[in-house]
Length: 295
Image 1 (cartoon, rainbow, N blue to C red):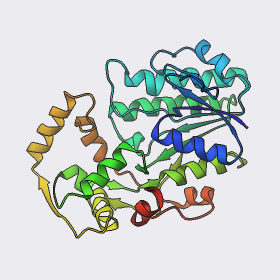
Image 2 (image 1 turned 90 degrees about the vertical axis):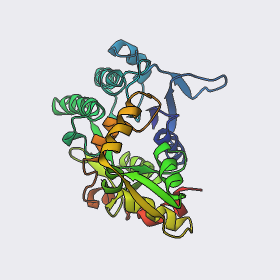
Image 3 (image 1 turned 135 degrees about the vertical axis):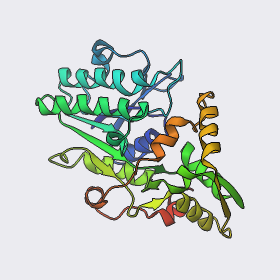
Image 4 (image 1 turned 120 degrees about the vertical axis):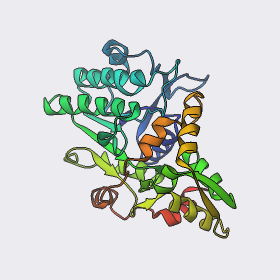
C-alpha cells in the first residue's frame, strides 16, 4: 500500500515507518521540513496547514493516511489546537473528498475523562473523524495508546533516568498515576496488522500492555531491570508539587506543568484483550520493556 504517515520523524512515527516498510508498504513521510535527497518525504506545516485545500494534493492516490502527530504542550509557534484539531480535521476532510480508503488516527487513552487542553484538542479531532465515518464518508480506526515506551521516546528516557537515581523525590501524581505501558514496537505491529484486518475494529481501540501498574512502581521496575537495588523514594509535598507545576508552566520546553499533573490524575488503563487480539499475541509486559524495547 502507499501510505502517508504524518509525524514520521516523531518517536512513534519513526517506529511506525520502520514496521510498515518491513511489511512491504511504500511510506511517504509527512514532516515539518524535507532534507536534500529525501524523496520519500513531503513538507507539512502542522501549525498552518489547516485548510482542506492544503491536503488534497498530498492525500490523493494514497491507500492509507496515518496521523501520528502530537505535542504535549501548546507554544506560541505550535498552538496545540492547530496541531491536534484544526490540521487533522482538514486532513480527514481531504481524505473523505479524495476517497482515501483508510485513515488511522493515533490518539491517546483517557482523553474523554480529562478537561486538559491536550485531551480536549485530541478528542475534538476524534469526534470529527467519527462523524465522517458515521456519515459513510471514510473508513477509519482510532488507536488510543497508554504510555508508549521505547528507545527514542522522551518520556521513556525520563522514566529510565529517574530509575537510575538511588534516591528519588517524586510528586505524588507521578507515584500514584495508574498506567498500562505499551511497547512502541507492539503499537507499530498493531498498525501493520490493522492494514490487513477487515472489518475495522468498532470505535476507538485502547492500545495497552498486559498489566496496569502505578507509575511509581513502573519506575521501580525499570530500576530493577537495570540491575540496581531498590531506590529510596520520597514523596514531594503537595504544595511543592503544585508550585513546581506552576513553574513548569512558565517553561514551554518543560514536560512538567499543571496540565501534566491533571493528566496524571486520570487513570490510563484499559482491558488488554482487544489490543492483544489485533496483535495476535500478548503485548510486552512492563517488566520486560528494557530488554525488548531499549536496544
